[in-house]
Image (cartoon, rainbow, N blue to C red):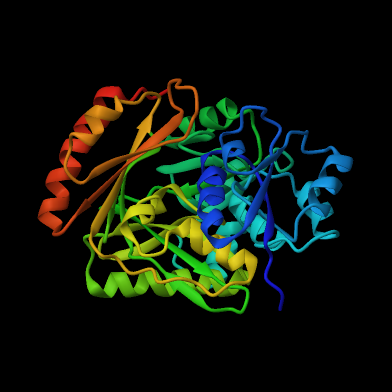
Length: 373
């Protein structure tokens, strides 16, 4: 099996940027396809700036690389299917199709033996589906569009039949999933990588904190029982193997009343895995590139406790960050605006207590500059 040394990446955001930077020490050259002329990843490789439906540009892009991957899941299905006919796409169209539709994703999780809350489809083509969903799930739930939407967008929390009907109207009466609300104790995620040969590598389970639907902070390892930790890793393995996934993904889970309930799958490198850039021997980005290239996966062990704090809409001065012990800054090169992830803070500590003390200072700095939408 030959190793891919030229990898095309669909999407050129900060995830692509970090993938490209991680590829350089491996001798891998990245080329990014993104319609945005200011795509942050352009600093880490070549940039094809063209529309997603430009078949000529897509073909030239594919022919310039050995294998193709993606850094976000809103790549048009037709574009990915077209590219699969030219070069290997890793992870495959199956991973994208399964996870970009929330009904299909929940059905896959359920069939893979991963616990999910009650859910039902709501469709403009089935006038009775709203009433049926209400009868299936109950009056307290979360209504989400079946496709697109992230960081809390495209969803509504409802507490009654009236709120459900109004929420659906606010979402444009689009095809939706209606899920039972989970009164969770905390949110966790598992970031893991599966190689081309089927080998797997798992990172420590991460404890996440969201603000207004946007990830604010991740702690590694999560403050979780040994049993729940093993359950989370087992569920992540089921997802990787069930999809035949090649590359890194994240499985987000709720911890509720001593059990785990799956929230969603991100079929790519994930915000809750950014801590691995400083906190793991091999980052999620490097392991993704290794997997896509056909290289052996790297050690996911943690020399220290680690955390990540998102900077949303604004950034402090570099001097302010570097004055904090154990804290470093990762800028994305994006123009700040409310609600936009523009950077993150890495935090490390020799012990959990030291980490938490440093995280508190990093969070205070982030809350001062963050501007949520």
